[in-house]
Amino acid sequence: MGLDHTATKPHDRMAERFQEKLSSVNALIRARMASRHAPRIPEVTAHLVEAGGKRLRPMLTLAAADLCGYVGEHDERLAATVEFIHTATLLHDDVVDESAQRRGRATANLLWDNKSSVLVGDYLFSRAFQLMVETGSLRVLDILANASATIAEGEVLQLTAARDLTTSEAIYLQVVRGKTAALFSAATQVGGVIAGAPEAQVQALYEYGDALGVAFQIVDDLLDFQGDSAATGKNVGDDFRERKLTLPIIKAIAKADADERAFWKRTIEKGDQRDGDLEQAISLLHRHEALTETRAEALQWITTAKAAIQQLPAHEVRDLLVDLADYVVARVN
Image 1: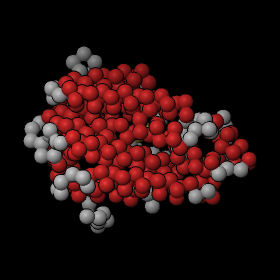
Image 2 (image 1 turned 90 degrees about the vertical axis):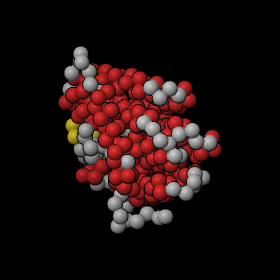
Image 3 (image 1 turned 90 degrees about the horizontal axis):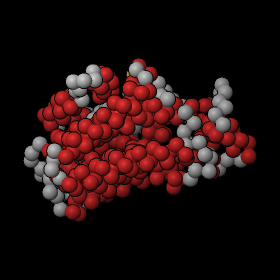
Image 4 (image 1 turned 30 degrees about the vertical axis):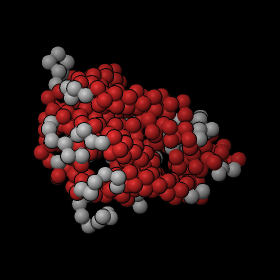
């Protein structure tokens, strides 16, 4: 079943299918982000949680559990867990990146301060662990604990690699596998585990989430240079201004002549950015077909994701997950 552009978006159709479950997940999130002693915690959390995110990661958990025939409520706890981990990493990310905008709104660190963002992020991580323990599954705990460590590792690796022009595509992939794909793959994998699915299906769900997560981040990096600010909630060129060495730039640097290399060294490594530099950067990306090649790479990951999910039994949710994979790259013109 291919992507039907006239139909509603796949994640909207998923939200419709899991409407009741998502309501329970949202109620759980609201209940668990409460704090009797520190009112700032729910204030900061609500600002981000209710900013209109798509709840993509929690939906992946619900979809994986449903696809594997799960009946119960542990999938809701795990979906809330995944959203708490995601929200915690966003709070920490915005401090590290000194971001001013997230989902089209001012970031928590801008509205409150860095200390509040970091500490509330820590609180949400702790809440996530309390929730996952309630499922009583050591395997689930193992998967999500490993994912949390991998996410932190990916963020630290990005710190050292982000402004180093010698950063390779392999290092970039390692960063992406950590900071983005780890939570996608954990979200799908725990859905299968909680449903007691056969090991081959749990592995296929992991592979789907991993490939989808890598493609998702690559497309995010592309959208930074050719996205619509109204749709993405980010300004075009934010990654460039934050001196992030993303895949399109890594590809352009690999083909750069001496003058172009000097431009990247000045703008990314040294942070000496002037008027017109973003336009010059985008022009170099087009000259070396870096954006086209990056999109092709995202498509390869989507092919991997779709091949993995096809290993699961035929099911309406499996078709939705295939459509979701197609949609990830369809976001880029």
